Length: 127
Image (cartoon, rainbow, N blue to C red; front, side, top):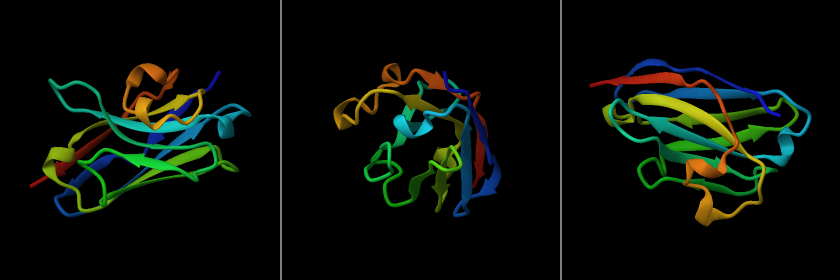
């Protein structure tokens, strides 16, 4: 069982930066692939980024590649999402999620493979 708690959301102007954190409970955090998703009003939840067990592999949605960076600190049971050059279209509730299965890039975009989810944190980017 893993419990996830996101923090770090807020209101920022376009071009600004935010860093989201996701703190996990449980002793097996390092054995989970971790992902970030987002959901804007009236839209489906969409994949943002994922990171492998040790952080050696990362995978990004095209819409955030080059602007967002996912990282993790297994000693602190925390995964991060550094978001730079934010755009109004990045406005959404951001969720972190944990996947206990192996790193399979072809599957990472699907919310269905992630067993555990946080409650979400709101990110609003003003123009």
